[in-house]
Length: 147
Image (cartoon, rainbow, N blue to C red; front, side):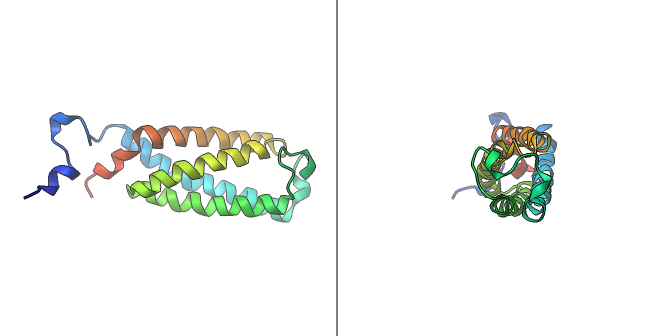
């Protein structure tokens, strides 16, 4: 008979599945995912409704798309980031993997968007790099938190 308890909580001396101090940072990263998603929501609505707000026109961007297209892309990214943030806090592996992919794509979006709003895009890129690091290196620790 297979003992499923050992697969969820490995033996103490194995070193795998231990909850360290990083679990708090991973939970913070889940909340930060939702926050970055909210920032993308704001940026997306501005791109949809006030395209004169940005420093350059659509032709000044690396990828010359209308700001309404960028707004829709950022709104989709926002919803996905907020949803995966919830999943990371809940300790779901699918959310962690999806979050890494979505955050990477969002980083590319903001690199392309950099000429339009440099300070905002730089802030989002920095947060995204932090999120990718935490989710890749320490993300699995949340599934070992007793619930």
